[in-house]
Image 1 (cartoon, rainbow, N blue to C red):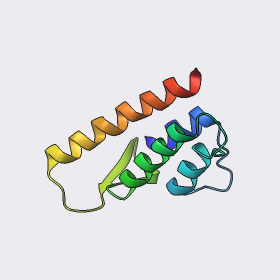
Image 2: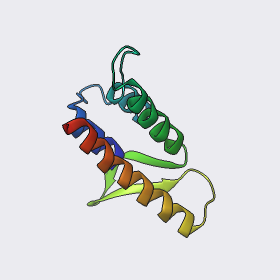
Image 3: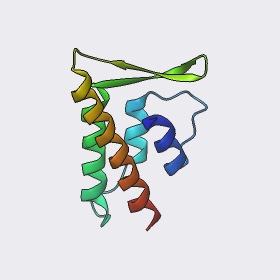
Image 4: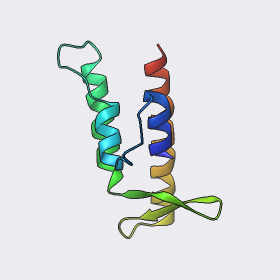
Length: 98
C-alpha cells in the first residue's frame, strides 16, 4: 500500500525494484532551500519510522497484498497504525497536488 501510493504520487520508476526505504527517500527528497523542505522531511521521518513496524512485502500471494508485523503488536495497535499511515498518505497526496 505505502510503496504503491508513493510510487504513484511521485512517479517513481521501479525498474530496478527499489526497497521501501529507497522509495521513501526518493519521494521526499528535497533541498533545504525548498520551501516545502520541513513538510517533506516530516513525511520522510513518519514513513521511515513506520516501515520497521509494518513490513510491506513486494509480492502478492494470490490476489492479496501481504502485510507482516515486524514485531509483536496487538491487533488494535496495528489497526491504529494502518489508519495513521493511510491518513498520512492522503495528506501527502493533498500536499503534493497543491
